[in-house]
Length: 436
Ligand code: FAD
Image 1 (cartoon, helix red, strand yellow):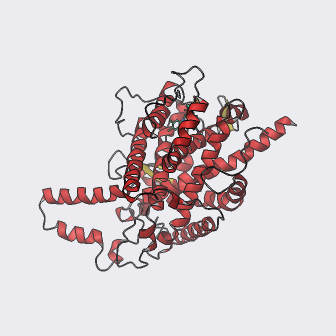
Image 2 (image 1 turned 180 degrees about the vertical axis):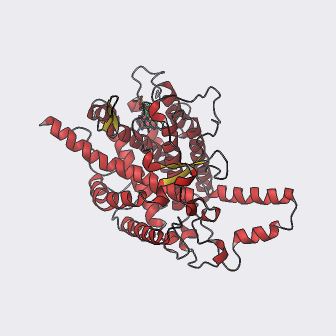
Image 3 (image 1 turned 120 degrees about the vertical axis):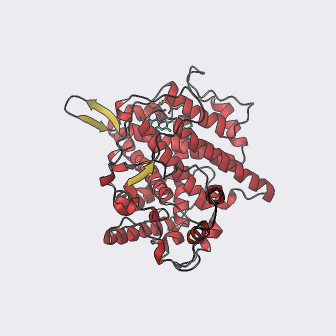
């Protein structure tokens, strides 16, 4: 059967069939409902950050790359209010030693320079936890985008520009030793593909953390390519555009024979990414369970209903029988593990900055969202102790926090991977129909 991935996944004790069943039946429908709510559909993003890596960067003029941003009236007031940054109850309800209040009180007695230094320090402190760069939400260039009106799908972005981004991510950021050249760029290699043997020797030789890192990026790449094959522009005329499954596009990217065995491996990396994000969702449940946490949009009934929906989803995520065991990562010698974790963070931050170089705005939007979402998942996985020690009181600010931007990207990124896994089932059945 074409493009079939079955059996146990490398680096984890889980099989593909268990994930398919769990995702398609228990997770996917709930997640779709949650993501259509106001809290999750409005995402604030700066699509105009300059590319920090190369200067000949241009903007593409492809029609399907356009992103429609929201007018101010379209976004609920509650989402726009600055007290909503951490989705906690508005701070006037908070008694005692809330960190931001403390800083605010001190602020009144300080000169501008010290105030600036304090705010830089606070920003640095927040940043040091993170695995990815977040956009400055206060920048006038940041805008709200309604994700439901700007779906991830085929845009026509391809060729040297797109390859340069993928190349740069894999070549420069995947801990690749310089001695192994991987002819990934189709401009460099005629076949345009990996030198199978050498590449797999390289991959197997990596420590588990670095291999995991490569697999996450490759899983993200696979998910994007599954989406563009599933929401392909099938027909375009004056009256309408028809989007749908393009089976031959999917086969060209994932069929075992056509890709010389690489396609199924890439799909397995997609499942690996799913497991990592699912694990993070299960772990972060105590953070969302606190009474102080709200999915605040200013519409109290709807907000309460959404919070219940979110908790229900996370409780289901927790019941998954074969969760990824992240304690195997960064578990060796303490000094080496710390260094490796810092390398991991730095490299992942670099990848999130590369997203500002993606010329197609629609691809940039979803690329940024998904790297932010994955970065948030990694932050959760490595904040286990802070999450467990979470106070269920409004009196103190927890040491672990997620901003609204992180929450929206985490769930929407997981939504993309969950949809890709659901789409694989659709492609399998389309392919089997074709064979009959
Ligand atoms: P590419 O997908 O560009 O891959 C280049 C090379 O990488 C391949 O030749 C292969 O050797 C290797 N490769 C491919 N897949 C994997 C994998 N999973 N793991 C490891 N190696 C791999 N296009 C859209 O239509 N819609 C989108 O929303 C969209 N979003 C994008 C977001 C980003 C951040 C980027 C960089 C690109 C995006 N694209 C999008 C473009 C799309 O991903 C492809 O680059 C484009 O369709 C050209 O495909 P290709 O067949 O030339 O191979």
